[in-house]
Amino acid sequence: MISIHSRLENAFLISKVSQKRRFWTGALRDKEHINVFEWSDGSAWNFWNWNTGEPFESLEENCVIFAAGRWSVDRCDAKHSQICQKAVQSSKSSDEADTANSVSVLKEQMNEVMRQVMEIKEMTKNNKQSNMLVIMATTYFKGTNKGLFKIGSINDSENL
Image (cartoon, rainbow, N blue to C red; front, side, top):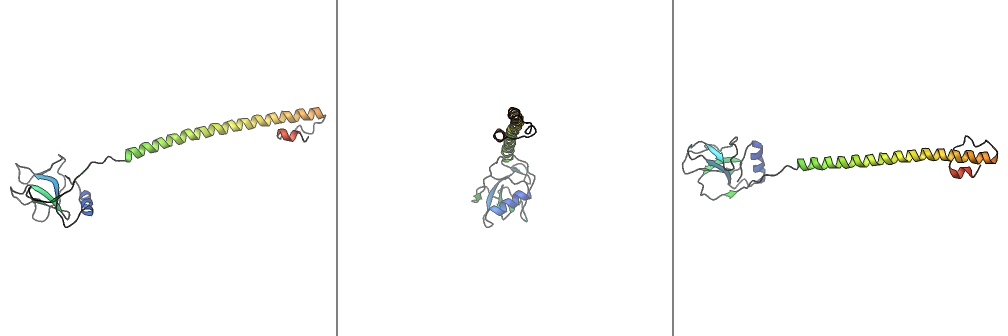
């Protein structure tokens, strides 16, 4: 059964249930103290929203009902609807874990891309140096120094 601990929770229930019906709560009158109530789930009695004239001091009315957002006491054998409460684990922790995992994967992918970019830069640098040697050798064997300062691909050396 429900336990209600704030105006926000009370308002949430108002928005979800029929305003024409009465619902049991998990609140019970303490058997030893007529003006003391407690939640059946053992949680703190830290909020109440009694209807005008409630809680009625009666040894026969020991259970609390919720009707249109206000609370009243009633006999525990009366017939009313019931609202059940279920603890829900916050999805925040799983969302945070998913985000952390995504960030980790993205970092790994970024590092791999950077490694490949560096390899390409190194290959390009080495390729330019190789092309320069090919051009210089081709120029030397053709008996001219015209191409000594030209940088191009291996295909360019055929045109010298």
